[in-house]
Length: 179
Image 1 (cartoon, rainbow, N blue to C red):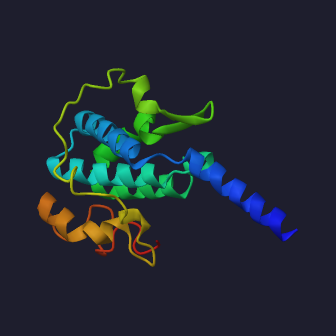
Image 2 (spheres, rainbow, N blue to C red):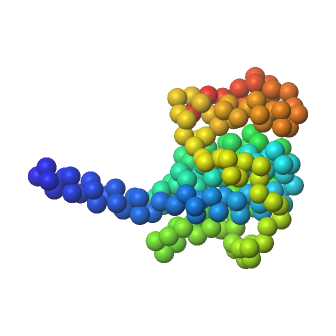
């Protein structure tokens, strides 16, 4: 019985990891998605770098079909709400290929941005400043450390703002330390 349970667990873990996106794929897709978001939402260079990190973290966190619009997607939206202006975020919400970047189709991921941007080789911006240095993982810190708390000082300096954002004057951001 113990051998059967162990075998079943191994089979389940292989199924989950078979659906996971490789780092290289996640990095390339995050770049493409972030580039189009920078173009359509008119992002600053600092916002572009932040959005790239958020998108890469999200794509690296998606392993199975249910992850696409689960916890990691909600965290992505929370992080984007912090980085984008109110106008940019409202526009982002109306663009489904940005708001819902992934769809599970025929046992694999479909990147919805390609429904609107069909040329996979066309980029509007250069690579974000952190493209080669950022390896991912800001959204996996856990124990109350949100993405924005990790990057708050550099974010505020890059945006030349005070330590509060336009949604909450507490300085903790709009979702505080809930992660």
